Length: 236
Image 1: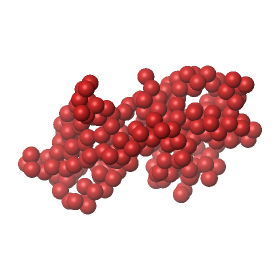
Image 2 (image 1 turned 135 degrees about the vertical axis):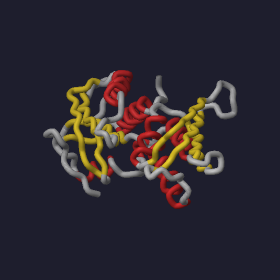
Image 3 (image 1 turned 90 degrees about the vertical axis):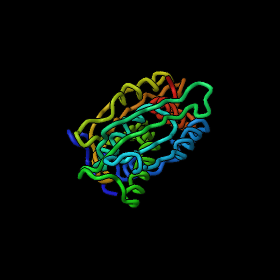
Image 4 (image 1 turned 135 degrees about the horizontal axis):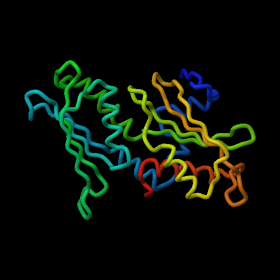
């Protein structure tokens, strides 16, 4: 993996940390909790189908998956990165008591940038795989040692237009506040890795007697769990 340094004067992440942070698979520390694992398993069972029979000019992209914060954002961002244009969309949320409770249904009429329908089965397979990956793992969350201190890392891919994901800083700090953890300092920068640009938030955490971090794997996992859940909308 190639990882360049931070832009805007930010120091680069150590290569081993960058490799783990930006890898495609979820780290063990991100899926340790049974409640979060259940949500991720639901997302992995997402159904993504292509239908070219309903419209003479567009491909109908149908997605049924677990609902979460930023889902529509991640879908549209991914389609844009894959050069797929959206002409019409319809989104349906679950209803209380329904068999599809907790699911989101998305219907999108799309075309390739060349104006053609998405007919090639290989392209459909690549797009289906990319969508599942981005919906399952849209953010990266890690706890690492920064010298004698403890640092929380939160990373998300930057859009082609150069914008980062909305509300990441707010949600991350909200999660830390809920746990009673103080932030000593925070930095935001950009880093290139895995052939894309990432926005990286670095929070230097203040250790305390009430919530010790130095030698507590459990407390570190609680932080990763809480931050990721808040970012994905599992906590309101």
